[in-house]
Length: 528
Image 1 (cartoon, rainbow, N blue to C red):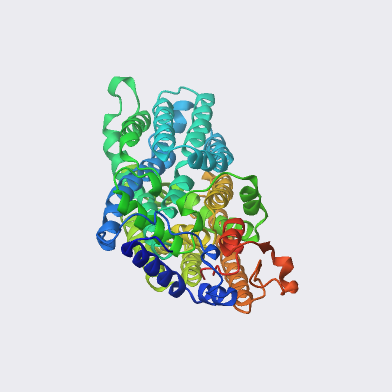
Image 2 (image 1 turned 90 degrees about the vertical axis):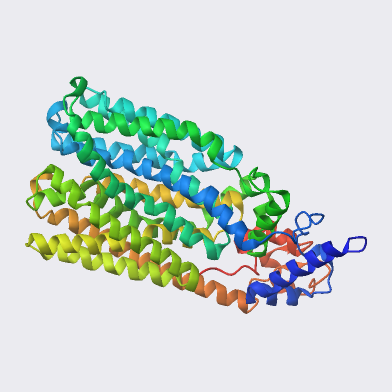
């Protein structure tokens, strides 16, 4: 470090101290390598020439939250509103006007999930290659157009075509934003942001019912029925939001225009101190993609997320119909769904905050799924409308908090920007394809108690609970192996004599090992 200024030395010293004290695993790994082995063992300090002494970290975090989370949450509100509004539209004679059967309606719901799942992984790769402000804005603008045109269809074929295109363009938002937020916040900060972002889905459930009830008063205007106006108005709102997003959505931390150079530097250094070694940028290599595809955590995460996402779509698409089947007409059924979503929104944010504050994402996931399990057991057993309505609250409080918590849990345990983008997209994509199944389980002939539908959702939650336990156990075991030094790499010039470690890889420096292995690096500790 000779030749550097005093502020730079102090910055390096501060960064090193936070690095060595942040996690016990990282301390022991660096000490095993030997702290005197040379500066080339660690990543060089990002923007070492920049003086960051004037940056208040708390104010910076508030600035990030203000610029990033509210608008992205609003976009997801529109996304979820657009994809689930067909459930509200159904209550206003959609099937009768398009001359479709209940089975054809279910197929129209299903086709959305196929295109949605197919395009999620490639969309996340494009997001990383392109600017988020361009890619996400383009997706929104296009799906807003599809949503609007959905209100102009006159037959079953037109409805199917619009639902396919809607799924294709909506595919990139949810996995894209979750990956994008993970590139801004430390692992212990991501959960509450993911929860607030996802809570927009619960708000859309409440808002969707109110909006549909209000728009239904336009029935007959310009010769269009109420269900058509629901699609048209909600679609036009999304088109405008997509247009504005080009100027509102920020890009990645190292290029963000709303931050000063010192603030950008602090954001990147914070991430690197949290074992996000790729925070300063990473070039696309197929090696990173294959790491994700071959990682056991990706596949267990897919089935874990399936256990929550399948129930999510079944719940959101059919809640108005379930309430209507309990003896209420269309508008009261939509309005009675509002408090359910409000409670779910509050619980989602509380669970996200608790997971960041106290850790134990795994145990919170298991607890949430257990609450949902109880809710659906009651729904299956109950033949009382009031008791079933109470059980709906338990189901919502079990399903909705689990979604962002699982995404945060999976994201926390993947390092490497490209690997994380693919892993998150694969997990969410697999979960969403199960929406194609769960959107077909509530058949009209099973009303009013929908025993078959509730039973299948109960099965999904059970699978999720088992996968959460498996994921937690295997992560704990892997952390223990790293603590014992079983995963240590050979670092040339430091521990060359440890030939038994050759199976873990041989590298010129710790920095090279981090860059190549990502979360498989021996000093990385998984979040439990």
